[in-house]
Length: 79
Length: 168
Image (cartoon, rainbow over all chains, first blue to last red; front, side, top):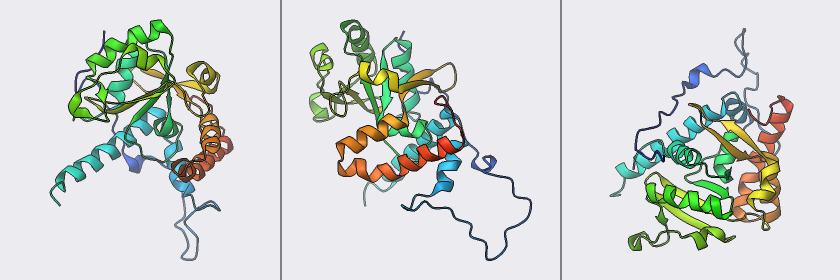
């Protein structure tokens, strides 16, 4: 049986604030570098954030991005 | 267009017993790469039985060719038996059925380089591993592929560093 009805699947919702990369006990000092990029300019913190999610949660993040982009496009369709 | 476009497509294919491997940007995301994509790319088994199962699913999804949507051209068995790419759009958005990718790699070729991933609610789909995705993009060397490669390579490095299994 093919299930192709709209709304039949419940996508996960992700609370980004709940995804912790590491536990920080002390606040960072003013001169501490708080970014982490690879030599070729890739934001490694973004990769680690994604990796902290399950595959199902990664898919939910993507679906959220796509929906948001399409919504914004539709709102600006006449521009 | 309804929201939640990827899951219902994958669910429909899986529920119908279609043999396929998720590739492209969606495969990269499922392996943890922070990239965006708007379509579902799959390499399907071109066995006659698989295509016979696939055609009614594509009908239920209202799949037509993207190139001239106004003509509402639907894929046939002979299209899906070929090694070519079928660029479709369904009620859930763009969906590409790829008879082969890279330098002629088919479903059978890619099977050992794929892993089943749990997408929740009992849905498990086979996804091309990041290692193979990178190899194919390196081999193709197109501008779009080259642009994505640094993120894919660093994601693979981080996965290895953090000890992730292929299922994670």
